[in-house]
Image (tube, rainbow, N blue to C red; front, side):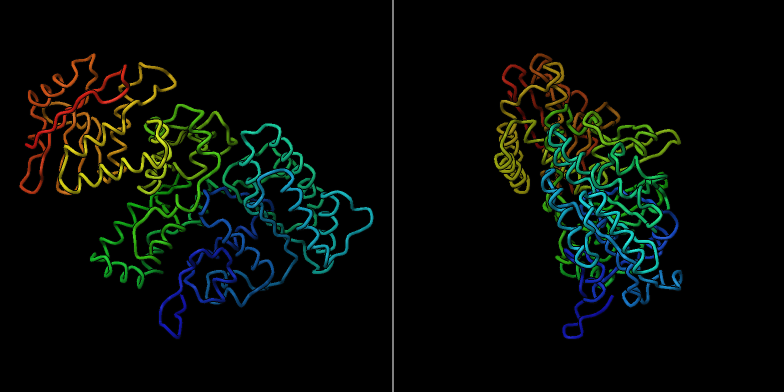
Length: 525
């Protein structure tokens, strides 16, 4: 937490994944080095899974600097009370994030090994990736008199990119099989192996050839090793909080509440007290003094769109879903297990733990928004820009207090909605899902099946000083007249009347054959 002497403005590590650059440039650094030391010293073979843009590369970089004995970078940090010797050793660091195919992966490994062979000349008989890597480990150990460290960041990137291409996926697996067995052969020359990724592919040779790989992703003691806790925000970013509050006209607690709603809520273990914010989004929000969707704008998983298109997933059937404990903690990613993939990719997180199973749900508003911006255009068969244009039009109308115009734009959005894969019998739930989450993307807080004294309201949407009380019916179940009658007979709107709220009753009817809204009725109460 060093100030820039010329400007007195603190540097935030926006876009930086290098521990050395962060420390040498005097950027704010949230100290995780006690856990870094534990990972480096307690077990030989380690794997940590976390979503993209969640600090895995920074953690790997920190381990690299530690193993290289760069003590000066760690002055003032927690690790200084744990490490006394600071002996450097050879570090072999690989980053697979830029590899999308088997050829790219093979080329990268050849180049990476070639760079290390500039210091440790290649032996004449070392022709395979495995043999070359094994020889490097022996030579590195001999030079420093200590076993080497092997760090592999984003090990699963090529596997993710090829998961829907069986032939290419198998070629990628073959490249892994030609390289990673060296970790088993050279085990006596390795102090620590550390791998990061989003998803687990434990049947690969990389896991099957190693003894006792520690899958750290769900261990409570490492739940906060990537990510930032609320206590860490308060203790590390007070100047940024104060400036953000001042610029936006909030107080500190309002600022923290907005950051929490948008970026907090991640749990990576059964200990639900260990909750973290998405570090990428949080740092960007503090730097820009703005609440925005930073995570989705940084690029999504290449697997997500394909998986959602191929499966009947609308969001409601995965939010608050239950998954077996062993499945979550031990099972490989699968095309057939959408909740597991969404958890590993960061779209779902742990909400509850029973001892035998976990409940998963969306962690925060940013992620829910990102998910529905992917799902809803497919659900209404609109191109992304068309869908966004409709959402913007609805939001503008609501801001102007023109509920009639908002409904007209909603009707246009829902027109010619395709059937769900399971057919017409789910069309009513599909329409409700689309309306509810479109209103969410417009900035509404939406409650479904809201229980009040006179019954259950289909949807209640809160937008600024407005409350929209919405009843939905299919034409074949009475249509618009049945929806209006239910609103009147049960006087749903009465439960939401207050001096500072404008309450609107909205009846909506859907026509299955036309696959859209057939009629609607809006009345200000």
